[in-house]
Amino acid sequence: MHYHYVEDSRGDVVDLIPFCSDSCHRDYCQEHGLAYGGWSGCQEGGDSPEYCAACGTYAGGSFECDCQRDNVLVGRFLSDTGEKCEHGNWLQLPASYLERPTWNARKKSPKPIR
Ligand SMILES: [Zn+2]
Ligand SMILES: [Zn+2]
Image (cartoon, rainbow, N blue to C red; front, side, top):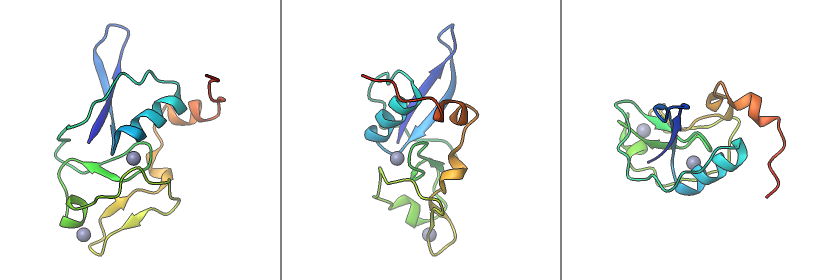
């Protein structure tokens, strides 16, 4: 999985935003006015399932069942309802689950023109 490192003004890492893929990482940064910061894949993730902040797909971390482990669909379109496997575990979180404290504030601002 991929991480975006959020640093404070002193350069300390204060948050990690998980992604399923580099393209989701890039899209998210562009959409939220963050500096992309470079490729950051091959992360193992934590000891609970982690989901892509951009599209909601299971991205890494400890899996709850083989469906998550074997998930190969990344970079999906956001879904209002998400998707669960036959065991009731999330393969993709609903869009509303992905909101972060900074998400709403930034979502409303227009995309920067490049
Ligand atoms: Zn994604
Ligand atoms: Zn399953």
